[in-house]
Amino acid sequence: MNPETERIFKVLGKYNAALPDVQMFWDSEQQGKFNIWKFLVSEGFVFSTVQKIEQWIDKAIQNWRNIESRGTVNTHDEYQYDPHWKKHKYGVPVDVIKKRAKIYQALGYYVKQNFQNIEVHVFSKSLSSEYDFRVYMILGQSLDLDWFCIMPTVPDENRLQDSRLLQVNIKTLNFCKLENSNTLQLFDNVNKILTCLDPINIYGYYYDDNGSIYKHQLICTTSDNKIKAIKLGLQASGLLTIDRSISEITKFDEEEVYKVEEIMEKELKNCRRYAISLWNSGYEYYLGQTKTGDWIGFQLLYWSEYNP
Image (cartoon, rainbow, N blue to C red; front, side):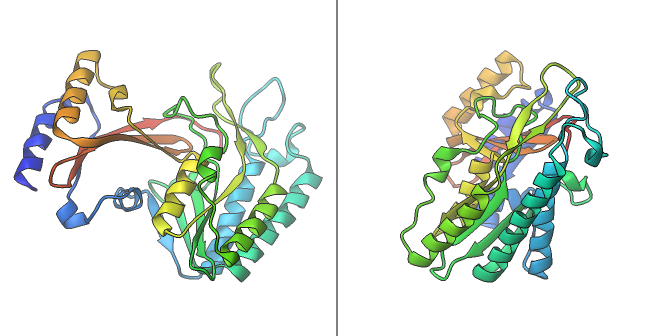
């Protein structure tokens, strides 16, 4: 560890007793230049594959379909999860499910036939965790070598992003405009398919008065840069939020928050909060960059019971 980085790390470490989670460190010399994708991989959020890719595309499509069949209510008076969703009186009608299944099938077929260098990534802290809580992303390239990212919206049950509506981040999607002909054609065709999949209400945590509803839908982002396409997808879906609110380190008491914020603002630059929502778990990283290019900060972890 760089001596200057170590000094700041130890200074912030004095407040670790007030924070029963993890102090973070990114060594730029060992791990390379920081970006959000490399960070998520290093923290164990991502399982990636390019093997048996058609099977993994099918798994992603099935996972997205399954979300529609869960999180629906048994009755209007009893908002609780019932795994026997096919019996739901107020769930998604069977004829609608069958129609949407054909659209999902068309999406999978189109991706297999038209995308190059396809990758499937699964977001979960552990692949041994509940299947329903995994988030699948499909990446692929056009003939113009631009990158596409397709993934579902992700709820923020832990309220890490209170200012975010539980819907697609339209402002982020507006950045996804490229001029290359094959890219434009693929982007338009994918979105025509996605438009046929109207958003479906998914119900969340039922055990108090703060039960939430969010709209499940698929989004597509594109960029000439792979990491940017991924970042746009993560932000548009709601899985990732990046902002400057390091003063909201909620597990510290007020005095500790002030001291930590003061130290980070004085000793570090580019201070950011990275909020990651994974259905029933949420993670906040408060990070800043040292003069030598390393990153230092804290991780906070939140859990809730969520209806998949």
